[in-house]
Length: 348
Image (cartoon, rainbow, N blue to C red):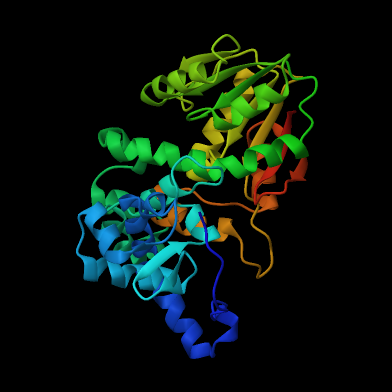
């Protein structure tokens, strides 16, 4: 239960003098860490019924009362919580996003940003800047996805985080793109199937294939069955660097190609082309980096692509070049109400 702001605090950076704007930008890591701690502790869930005192929250989370109070003051200053009276904190609309299982929840996403491994990797970002190579492998000794496979608890949070971020763009994709004429859709690297299920629900005549690595596919199988789509959605285990199921009318890749450098992205797209007939469609759901100064989520995520995964967010021109090299023509780019676009390719 969010409570209305009792005042109008200064939360707009542009309202501050330039030196203070730079100060707050430089302390983004502190705010991000505090946010991930609140998500991990489930503070927002504890405030669902109304404001609570910091000592009560500390008791419920086995934390130090004074220390938690300080973290809550920081997060209240950026609008995540609100201090309704001295030492008593409530939810705001931003704080509602840290609740578990509610529409718009970003709790798993924020928990993911608090993985300890990031604090090993980010200090080595200069290595990525000098070499163009991900610092993650240099620092951790494994590629990011191999690391997740070896850490199943973090892998679970990661897949839930992808579902968190995707919940807003799934309906936006459905509204923006005309899926009529597609009888079978292959969701390549579909994780828990959150987008595929929305598409199947909106198109009762359609069937789907969710294709992902074995450990991810098994997790998705249960969720898809619980949603009542087991008869319309086949689960296929595999590796998109090797081959893909044939016979789909459309091959959907949401937030997949951005994970990889051009060489490996090209391999994925070539495997899509090999599995497709001439009338099938390629549908990428990705951010398009604009040629302007506007704040855009893709520009922030591109830092993680550089430092951690070795992938990249791309411009329209870069996607066009990838399509051309892999046997596709870039047919059109359909903006959605989310930061994502649908990039449609057709076989050449």
